[in-house]
Image (cartoon, rainbow, N blue to C red; front, side):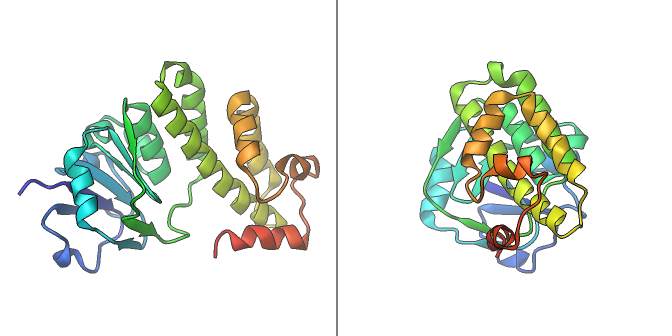
Length: 232
C-alpha cells in the first residue's frame, strides 16, 4: 500500500509498531537531516520533534488522498510534499521551523483545513536565533518572487515563530538568563524588513512590544506572568 504520510521524528516513537499502514515513520538521531528527508516515501511528510499526539481520522487520510498541494496546513501542524524538503541544504534541515519555512519558499501551492490530527508538546518546537535569522534574511530576498498563497503562509509562519521567540527571550532576559543583545539582533533584522516588522508587532498581542522595546526589554512581574501562561 502506498504510504500517504511519512512522519520524520528526532525521537524514537514508543508505539511505532501500532502505526496505521498508510504511515511511514522515520527516526533521525537527535536532529533532522537532508538524508532523512530524501528517504521519505510518503505522499506528504510531517516533521515531528519531541512528544507527538495523533488523532488520525478517516477524514484526515481522505484529505491526504485527494489533495496535491505542496503544503497542507492543519490546525497546529503543517505537512509538505517530500519533494520540497529534499532540495534543502543541510544547514536548513536541522531545525523544524527552518526546514519548514525554507520548504515553503520552494513551494507553489497551499491548502488549509480545519482538522487537528497532531498535537505537539508545548516545549518541543523551540528554535535557535540563527535559524530565525536565516528565515528572515531569505524572506527579505525572495518575498517579491513568492506567489500570494506562499507569501501569506510564510509571513504568517514567521510571525508565529517570532511571537514564540520574543516571549521566551523576554522572559529569559527578565530572569537574567539571556543578554538583551540577543533580542536586539533579531530587532535589527526586522528593521531591514518594515512590512514583516509592522505585521509582527500588530500580531504580538500579549503585551505592547514597542513599549517593551523602549524599556530595553525590562518587564514587571505582572507582564512576566502573562508570558509564562503562554507556555503552560
